[in-house]
Image 1 (tube, one colour):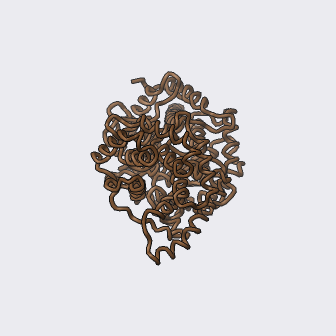
Image 2: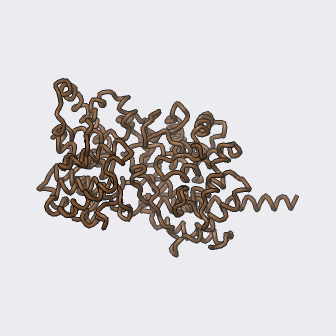
Image 3: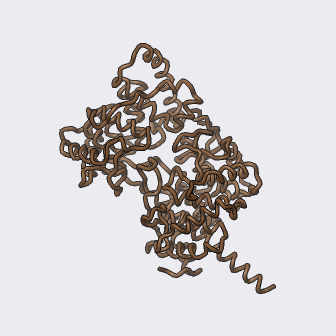
Length: 566
């Protein structure tokens, strides 16, 4: 393993920064090459076939051919290219092929059904919404034995905005799509029909609000999977044909050359926020190449409210200026803006910080979209809360700022019995634990027993080669090693020095000849069921870990020199 020296760390930072800059586009955003998605492709072909079978025959044919090629030798599918066989993508792929190309795919479908049964079927899916979705698609495909009982979705929830936001949050659009699909699948009694007559127009109004907010592009969150679910619901129900046509157009524009669709939404702002914080930590805050990135982040701050989720203007989306505003990306972008040389006079930074503080839950945490929700995958989340603390602190808010005090108090109550913390949007448990340790340490809680116990867990789960994985003994990744190094560095605990040095040595050795680090599937798309890699986030996290390590080493060296001089 490469020895940890100032020279080796410096070389890794320089090469890594240049590798990341090569991903910068002329507009300042950072690009990536997301993997193809079985879910996105299966959803898209099913929706396009239902919406316009003749006009979209080319897309459906290419997409189903891709799905057949993507089937594993064991008969199943993974969520993205390179991932192992899993229940959710296998169920969705089998259903989509049966709906769109049953004759051409007969053998593939049969093998998929056998593999789905061997995996335990949809009963093994832990997310209730995803389980119901798989059951519904299988039922539509005539596979009632695999689907099992189908529960009716309460479309009437759209009549009660506050309840709908709390219970559905960002899943509002696909929920509406799924509920509309059920119109010709599940018979309704007289009372049910009466309530649906009120609920259906309200549901369509919600979709239209999203459609208008996004500039009537048909993108529906710029993610092929939920966009396909909405289109499928509109096609089956006959509602909002103009939105359906726009969604068809967007899916046509979004298709990949090989006939598949991407695994995730457009993440321009996610990538760019992480890229900026990584490059700033590596010493590039004043680099002219980041000027366009700073302007891109300024230009994409949202100036309109997102009424569907009751989010006021002032934050950032994961995609663009017309996307859905989220806390996680907003906090990362604010940390980036706080690191630029002119941060002290940046009005966008000040306004964004006020927005972030205003999105804090009443209990002290932060959720992703809806304040005070308890919905899985929205909030409250220890990792998102920690990112918000770090953003406020990076921008100069003191440890005793009321928002920081309340957030820290909440975090100190959220540790699992083994000392770990959850992370809704990245793989548990190293990522969440490390981010919480870093945030609490930065705001004066490094010696608190909760933090010390979490740091001990991090040290105890380091692998023999110096890396970290999820803490279950599986192989290490660049992302989790970087998070762990940052968390342990923040504590300032001498007991962590050896673990940090070994982690940094592993990171230096893991870089490729071009300065790039290999990306692992640690980003959650469906928690516990589907993950994907993000090369820009990987590169940025490694730069941040090495940059903070170099800074800490310089501080220690300066302190030692001062002590000798005195």
